[in-house]
Length: 234
Image 1: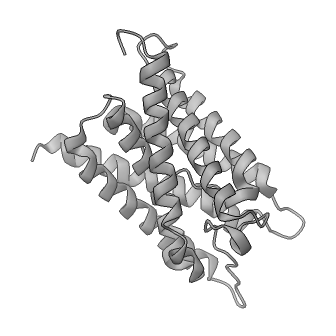
Image 2 (image 1 turned 90 degrees about the horizontal axis):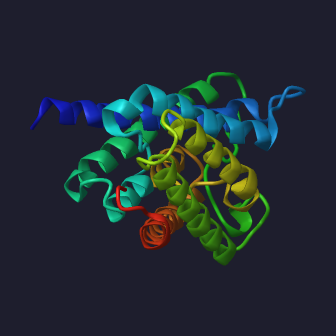
């Protein structure tokens, strides 16, 4: 095993840890704070900022995926070796679980602590806006597809250098602004898995959708980009 491989896995672990802790942490700890709650606008910005900061700090090491769906989508687009998928996905999921564990310890560190939904994703009765399974499925597929198109375009050779992390982070912020009311926003199976293991029991039973929909969406986004938008040097 090449030493650089461990560095890539470590970068993906840390990046996904930061995304989950920063994004979900803002929802669990800050969004509902009496009188100072940041609301879903603040949570949306928090998720975007984790990607921006993580991309610039860790992207040069691993590519800054921090998301199994992104890794799969990049592989489908020919931008990432399929042989590396397993290692990346394991590192991402472990990073998200570790972050959720840390967040749980912090959130329960006061008398009478109530973690509520613990930033988990859900549909039907467990959707913030009570949206059904079909709406949740369509939302997650479409949002992830667009996310992949933005990632592929922002990281193409013809794109403006140095701005990919900013474009991708802002895209994730916009995705959250649209879809928090529908699913509490996943577009990332690892981000969904970590909180589900520490949150309400329903989160695990509905977790399948937040793996299936982002992966399908990522592949669709990759196919659309390659078919309609890619240039010869992509």
